[in-house]
Length: 506
Image (cartoon, rainbow, N blue to C red; front, side, top):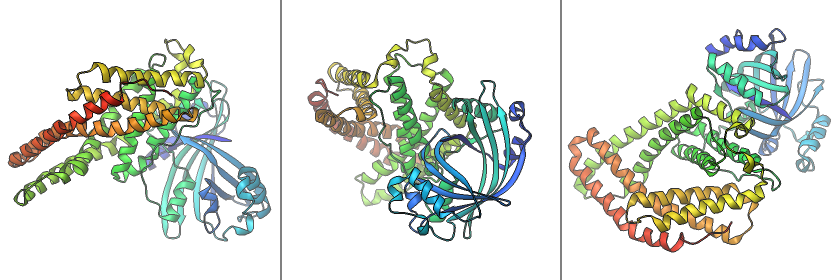
């Protein structure tokens, strides 16, 4: 199993890394440069890639190495992949070796696929100059450091490759985060969750970035709560990072799903706040990112859900067009802020810090009692879900539900309970629990409409400075939003009282 962190760098940083004091401090060998050509092969229908694997033949001079690589995961830059490799005689795949590798890595696919079905031409080619060092770290870990500068090519399409790989040869993978953090302090880098194979196939298929929703969390019943927490947090980080490409491409839904991933991460930490304390710098950076994503999302909702449904007369539509243009400018300004945020050193620092904290089980190093984290998750999960449910019940019974801010508090509590149920869904087989989850989702949507109306009124207030000549229309919009919220609140109160006041099972 290969375990490495990938860091993307720009041209200036690539040159500086060769002289990096951080890397030279731990180097046990001089940097060695080598040029190689990687050819990636697959069937005509990309059967290997559809199963998450890539077949690579690397040629350096007269030496050729065939590697079947894939599976595993990539979170916070840390790639864990199955890697099977052997030296071969030429730059084209050895069919007998491929069949053997396939049987070991993908036995189900091996029954229907062999080397004869590989296409003769590579899917894409990677031409790279690689500089490598071996590093010995103070904790005894040995790390191979590789700086790759090159180009991926499919036909006439090309894309540049500049990345630093830190692969642990022996030792704790958590050491990679500390090393990456120190490199980042002197030479700005970015977390790279996308492998060269992913980039190459995207080039070959003209694949566009798209929004990625949360995937189910895989948990073992015999795992401790601490181990389960690590898996949950990594799952949330994975969703966040899977949407980075879409956000950078301007996709609105990708921004929404990245925000959902961060919201899930915050909910997971809040769920165990009695025994887990995140370091303050990380907490501050999470709040900063949440603010940037939240502001952008509010404007996207305003444009998609508020303005299109206004009951306007024909003579009001020119004024609406001017208001909408101003709102689109605000939305794009905030999306640009998000793009800048996730390209910033601060974002990379946050991901490296979170990844290192999770990999190093940072919850074991706080002043809070950690004993509950040693419980089996199968025992701890019902308690945590029921605690989240009790918070919903308390707010549904004890709050003044005629006040919109109180309904908003109920909504937030219901959302946290829903996330808790999703985190531990692999451990629950109760049909009533599934119905509770569906109920919470419906209530969140219903209460969310009220919250969206109040947020939209705040945005209308901001537009008064942008289009003061449309004060009349903006006042009308505020009135419509207020009326919508007031109409929805009695129904929401009835549903909260009737559905969320009872105890719920897990």
